[in-house]
Length: 140
Image 1 (cartoon, helix red, strand yellow):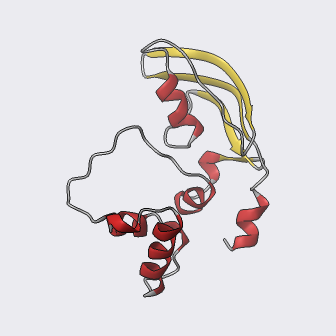
Image 2 (image 1 turned 90 degrees about the horizontal axis):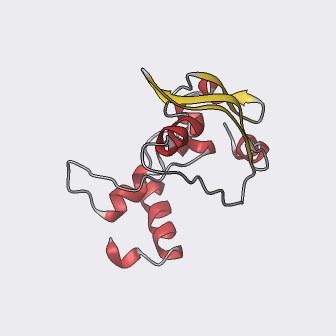
């Protein structure tokens, strides 16, 4: 997908319709309807165990809903290839543990993966430019 294809979805809301949230044998939420507009903050509140994290994993396409649908630009998230989905949305977990000692620059370069056609020397430059722009180049 080219930049034009990415921009096509830039204003599209994430829509969930008749979403049932839960884990096998443990229904948590039923008939969730939401229209999440880009560029806006949305809070999901509830007590521990209410299904907030499970709902977020379904809204991001990481987990399939028990029933109902989640779509972006009229396309079900489940119908969007993983690499394309990675270009359309980002997921930032609260906690992340990695098994290897990566440098900050290597982690930033990993974020470029869905945008790459093939490995190139420009990836390191793009990562450095992004780190400079966000004020974290000193962590490289």
